[in-house]
Length: 106
Image (cartoon, rainbow, N blue to C red; front, side, top):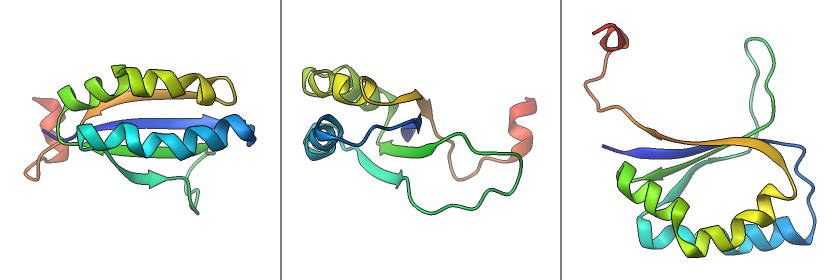
């Protein structure tokens, strides 16, 4: 099942550490099949407010998402982001193409 690393970042202090993080993250994703699906960009708020910048990275499965996040390569650059922004990050499994909204009731 496809899995995602999803983050909502706030108060990103764009400077040399964030630039270095951005320059290095793609190389950490490649061995695990990770690829950006959402990386900020224009958006329209339709209900309530929105707390920050949305990032979603797709992985083939949860094992590879975990392996990427825990990898020495990613852990080495992670402080460049966490020390220069506020936010929340999660790993979450996707759903298959047959998923219906009512499936959560089962």
